[in-house]
Image (cartoon, rainbow, N blue to C red; front, side, top):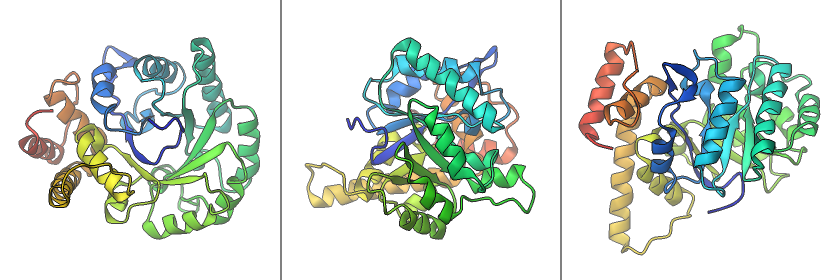
Length: 312
């Protein structure tokens, strides 16, 4: 296992479903993490994606981090969402989580993940991050997610981090990676902007982008919750990291089959992965069946996935 907090490869956004009786507790993390550990290069704890309606900051995130640290191997990289609704709240969340790490004496590979345009503009962002990083113990990964900004912002607000701003951000040595969820062309421009830092990685945060044109760093996958080994096969092959002892024909066939399964399922859950993927996990018995209010389209997608994957 690579001890770097930013390994090249497959980072799985761990499916997080709050327990209906205690929303600060997430369902069956032990089973999910045990299922994923052999296949992934790292795990991303991102309540903002999986339960946007829940109170995911503060105590909930602290208890989540404490449980994850207790369950994960000490050398498995953990990425943890710290984004709040303001700069002040984001720093408060970071301090709470770093207090957990100090109490547990945790010094493993861990990084905070932040989507700064959720609460900050491009203007003054390098100065803000310089101040934020000076008050942090762990490294930081910046998340560029135009879709989430589009949902909360007016039409005049920039949805993406400007390339010129990113060029300044990478001058901070403890800013270690970017997750890009936008279009491919902007992703290429971001790659050019960070060339001054050979250790700075740009990950694909959109699975379809990685499947179409893989980045040189890796992918943040939600679908890996369903097909961890297939996603591992595709990712390692795309990054030329695979180690195989099979014959060439067998290797190509195995890769083709993995690609077919991943692409088929991705087409079915992409309309609402935060609801459809937990519904499939519930059908497998890995979490409680508390996924309420699926639309007819989401229910049909769930049933179709279960036809392809009747068991976990």
